[in-house]
Length: 185
Image (cartoon, rainbow, N blue to C red):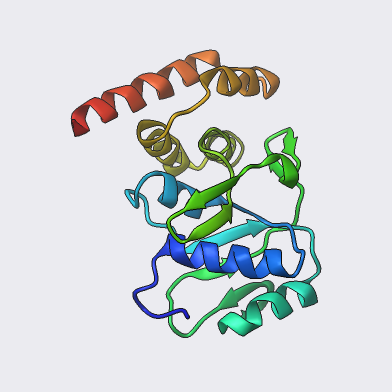
């Protein structure tokens, strides 16, 4: 049951489980992944579940939770929560790099299983937004994830090289995350 006090993580798990019960493969990505991995240092306004499933299947899967379409056919709202749920179409991609949903491990949370991009993929997601959409807040979100979570820096460097992005930027991100993490302790 979704109530006003339902947390973003709990809501994400409820949606993920409702989709999974209908054999819909969808992966939580974007700002809500940052919120979860950064312990709510960043607060997302929506939950983005990337999937190529049709609108009718998505609507039928989350309708029992109380969600209704909101204008955009892939956007849903619930009367008891401020968070919108959006279903960006697949593939699950970070710049030029695509990832199969099945290759994303399901995270065991205190509320149950959740298909969510890994912390490393979350950093790549935010870096892609920073580079390709000139979204400066995405840089800060990448730093937040990296300071709260273990990141596979070799994968980040390889991704940057594949995207023709600066290795120096990854060095800067790594230093900033380490510096910010040191301030917390």
